[in-house]
Length: 361
Image (tube, rainbow, N blue to C red; front, side, top):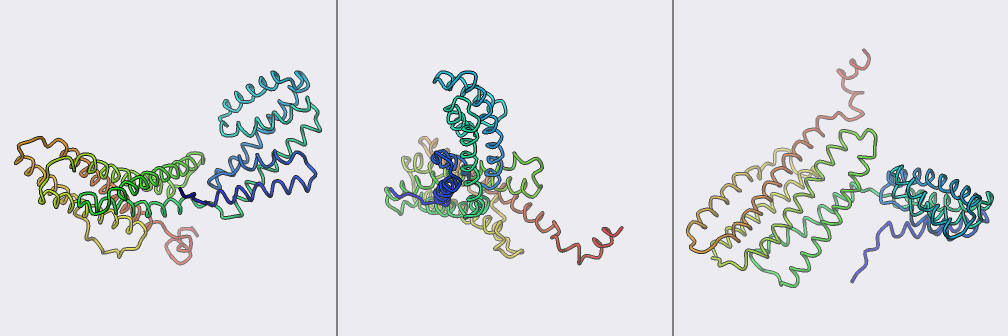
């Protein structure tokens, strides 16, 4: 099984190296604490890296102070260390800094080793800070993360996977083993996209005043993800319910044509979002009519059947739901494009007489 070598793996290694060099340069020991801190502190986005850096400084300082106090009052007995860790965990949770607990406890345990000696505690605290700083610095300088660009790029690659599966789901053109491998890869890509979207959403929620543009982008991104998920559910429904039923060539063509149409529509909307289409290019604006035509054709076919049509109904319902998500995505992308065109660029106020007069007044 192949391993994806990502930028975060590379940056973690560089951050550990930098932390070890800095501790050696400053004659601080043991350097392994700085290495551990650098590993913990490497974050997937710059904003999260900055907030994590500040949070760790706060909780590590607090943890070191508590550890020094506990070391002087309770010594460094194992039960005293354990009780101090419990107190620090409770405080971090109360402060809503749960993600800093692991590294803060490393600082607490290393500080309590000297039973409250202030010089020793300061040494261990500085080692932890060096590790945190190394991760923060490397994350900004070396291949800085661009989660939005990465999300959009992965949307396209995931759609390519979905397109292959949907175009061959009914026609059954590719080998079953290949189909299953591609389906498993699609599920993994959607899971990865979900994690990236959660990071974007978390970053925005943590900001006190997210911009209107960023909020609008997030709505579109979420719908892109929902549409891909629904498309994946269509593929699963076809595999599970379509093939076990008795079918005709006419029915195969009906389903195959509808899936082909929807995939092309999906592709068109993504190209529109990226601004790659001409402004007057509107060949796919009748998806609602196409979905209605498909529904009527399915109704007529089922009325002519003597046996159960429950499984076909399930597949048809999933296809209709996918079409609904596509329509909603198209409306959001249109709204997004209209807003983008209506927002003046920073340089426009200098060449727009009306804006200039308004600013002068």
